[in-house]
Image 1 (cartoon, rainbow, N blue to C red):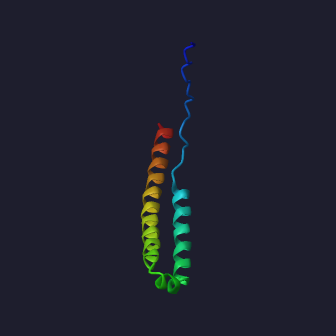
Image 2 (tube, rainbow, N blue to C red):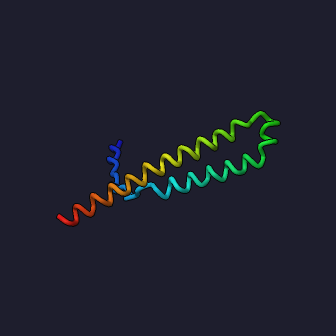
Image 3 (cartoon, rainbow, N blue to C red):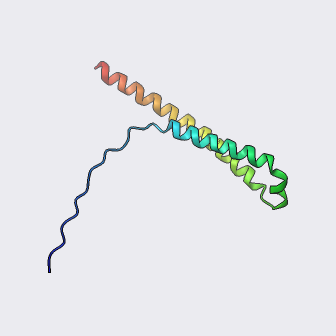
Length: 87
């Protein structure tokens, strides 16, 4: 019987992403879902699914909070890089 070869793994560096664009797209999708759910709110009410509207509202609000957080983070990273470059 032969002994199995040890696995070799590649080391992959993480992407240098500040996540602002990702949060913007996600928030925009929640806004679209909110508009669609408002257009079809009568159908949602008939099926007892008006909570979908509130789920979309929560998604938009959390997306706005995430946008604030990621934008602040982006600014802090840029400030730290400019400080490092001056040194």
